[in-house]
Image (cartoon, rainbow, N blue to C red; front, side, top):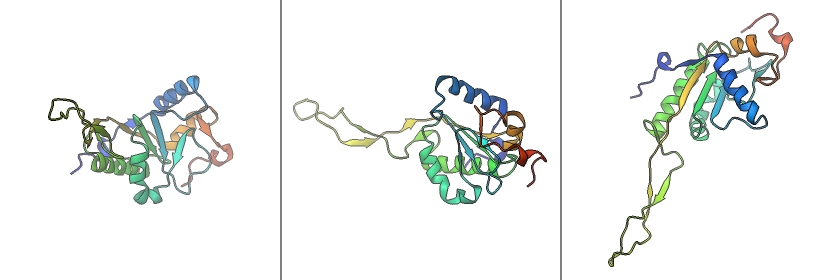
Length: 180
């Protein structure tokens, strides 16, 4: 049984996420950060902008997409989930992701996709090294999973018009606040 609950998933502030994105942008602005994934689980409210380098995975599709996300994001050190307010869909998605990751990988072990290594310790009859069999090897892999504090609504209040951090922002959509 999983030890994760919505209450135990840490929150990440918009300021902390923006610092991470800006640090990456100063070194390599063309590519996504290699150690960070941002997963936006908004549904029909995924309009008016999004965090740069985020991946849109509507919450309605999570039932079938969570195992895929675990495989695709297994090499990321940090995964951040968010929805509009990060009160329900974002935390729920993060919880589902953590539980599926734990189910597929075990606690802190990387085995998705299989890590194989030749067993070179095998010795032949005359004491010479012989090519061993391939065997599964578990690799320690820690990943931090967060929920973006205050979601995209909080993010756009601070960073909406900063093109280094936000893409596709449409001010007119947000003028009257969040509508959902």
